[in-house]
Amino acid sequence: MLSNLKRHSPQSFRPAVWVLLLISCIFNVLSVKHYRRGPVLDDSRYSYVDDDYPNELPLRLDTIEMDFEDTSVDGAYSQTGFDAWLEWHALDHFPRAHGFVKLGPDGRDFGVSMFHQIHCLSMIREAMVNGANDHAAHCLNFMRQAILCNADTTLEVTTETTHTCKDFTQVYDYIAENQRHWPKKSKAPSLNQTEDGHHGHDLR
Image (cartoon, one colour):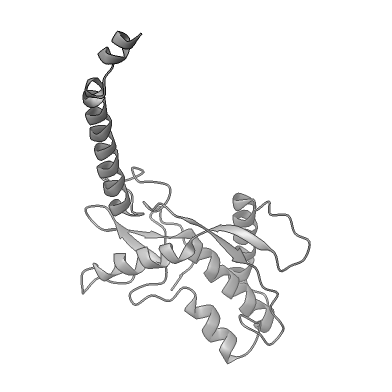
């Protein structure tokens, strides 16, 4: 019995300990690299020519808890008034273009649906004030599809309910940084005419 204990002395475990320490160090290094890489994803496998581009921004979004607020008639993001106009238009305001990015080696223009949706809400608000129009009709149907696409299944007891959401501030940061690298003489893009020649509407 004692002889068996001697054969399993602490010295015999040293190689295993060093192996475990090495594995731990490698794991820590890989974790740090993953953290430093941040939310931006590698999209280099796409050429951004024709249909060879990702379906979404190359961005990994965190989740956040957001308390929905029931706005009063004269509160933030209300229907009428100059303050309401400023608040709604500030939602998709960027220095170079409203919710557009340039992606790929040749800087191909793309709109981001989140800001198309914000734009459409603003257009619907204006139609409620000034009267219906074709633009608002397009936007109403577009928002119907956007809501169904996201399918938020949060259970509500009151209108002021906490929702689990994507961190939209990361989208704002990404687009602001993307536009910062645009050529100085680059024109602000528009979806007024799509690449296939069909006319849509201007998001600016």
